[in-house]
Image (tube, helix red, strand yellow):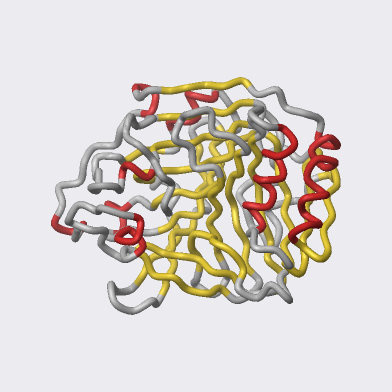
Length: 327
């Protein structure tokens, strides 16, 4: 649908939407390291997991708006794929500033993956969310990646100003106070199995912890090897969608050359809330980025991730429709 012809809806107040809060029994970081390392080594030729002090994430190559991932850690799942299937729900427009009241955190740092604020650009896009809120002051380092046309897979990038804090349809955010402290450092090189970096971590957590929810969020640096991402086409479908195959026609797939940086979340278990269990968006300094799928050069790939572990999981605006997490 051509967004420039739309009457844009008002932003939904997330404080007035259905909210499910789950307090998590967060295991010690060293226990998570012990749990995931064997599975990482099954999928990658070289892998390590350890507990380290978080590096300063405001510095290259990450360039975030806050230094760390610690303090009042939360993982949020907002909306879901049913806001796109079977028809586009343009009214699903949210504002990250609402999370300040929901969490009660100050400062509040928000990183993660979401759909872009289509009214601002007039087209749909993939947002790499990176926002710090201290009091009433907002610092917005969010990148939005969009396609130049429906037919040609040519990606471009725009940054959001501090006063544009909206997003649409669905989001997976890790929030914290942005303090530096102990985090998980996971390094994986040379993929020998079929699983992506995020899928491998998620399945390792699921295998060890079962139905106990472990929710992590953070940053990823891809130092070597190309990766496959998708970016939605400028105008999402006008007609109802019947399948995931049709949904895939609404995106362009491209390869990103290294280095690239990502932010996002991984959740080990869905207790029946229609969750997206892994969601990572990547960006580069070359105007390209998008929704991460997997690497395309397994023999040279190298991932380095720093993750905080959430003490609470929050689902906002849960749909009663069936969600197959097709994107």
